[in-house]
Image 1 (cartoon, rainbow, N blue to C red):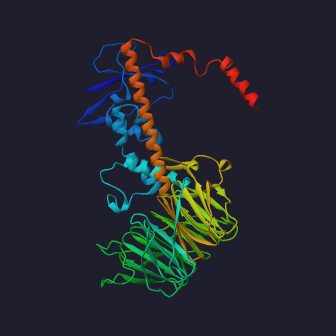
Image 2: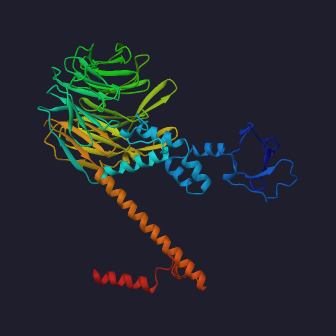
Image 3: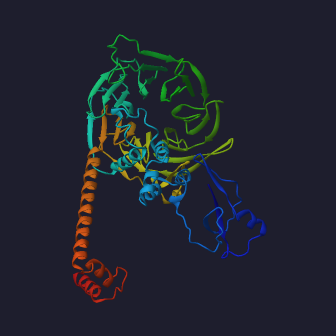
Length: 540
């Protein structure tokens, strides 16, 4: 089956014979469910297009046959929908039943989810809150809905157990576990939902300044230069045996650094560790050997890997490394006045957030042009009066912990725009708003913070771990939306009943008559508005 596309150019002026010959006929061939589209030279001029069956003898002036986007092949519609952002795709799904099905089941929802929060580690597991029966659109909408709860009500769970200052906290949202450690050299594991202590390791012999984990491995870095590791046990509810109660040998240490370890990170293949020996080491998870070493010019304070690149802070500078070649792609000199203590990165890897000794927070965009890489400052904030020791990012919230005992919540939604190709710059730094929320109630010196779904976990000099729980705001918002939906449904039901009664009695719709007599944008100088202004003056 073939179609011809006729182009009516009567209203656009003269067209060259060469253009006319190329655009007079276009054959779309559909064979075995696939669409074959020949290459066509497109003109920038606007043209009216009418689809005509091949073999038809109708003239181009006849426009009896017309088509809509629904009449196009589903593969072509899907390609068009992939160019939309989440809001536009949601609006398209409200147009018709066909578009609702195509837009709701579109593969772009999975990409939207991945760009914002990364893919779930354990999809379908009951512990992670996901189900195989739910579509990616439903997962995306729920996670986007949860992101607004940080502006609502909260409760605080206070966890006691550490005897000295807490230097590091890590939230493993997929398993609903929290890991903390500090000057007492003990790694503790907490239940995120109940706020109870699950297990504690034996003293490791020195201060623990960094902890990181996934569902297979837990690592802790000490000031003696070692990385203490625990492998997860199959069938164990809490994944890791910190007490050594089970007979299986799951603990071991990695040695190689010559100074205190300040930062740790994991991906599927490697362990990344940063140290005051001015180096970042890359360890292979299968052999547990150091395979690469990235040398810096000063102490390393933080690092964040992403695929084949790694960002790290050294002194006041920020490095972006190519892990394979062990060479820096770009260097941000003097990112802050004084030391750059903290670092966070978006899931796409295109945006960096840094916090420094000057109490400021900066946002950078990593731009790549072929083999060249450049870094551009997008925005900056000054929410704190003391050094920013820790940053954590989960779209769209950037959370910072500072020595002034405050947490700052910054919504970067207006600075980012998500599409099928990732994030892009949207507004300039001159229009940036201050932090949307400041959380108080601490003594001083918050050293670490982490954020996940509807929780914020932080620890500091007091030796207390606090979990800010925003599930109350989530439930309140859900009830409010449910009541709003019920009111709307009742209003529409009453409207339908009224219309049916008017149709049976032969009376016109009173609402339509009232709207016709009193248009919304009508004359404002009528008696009703005059009386309203007079009553307003009398009250004044």
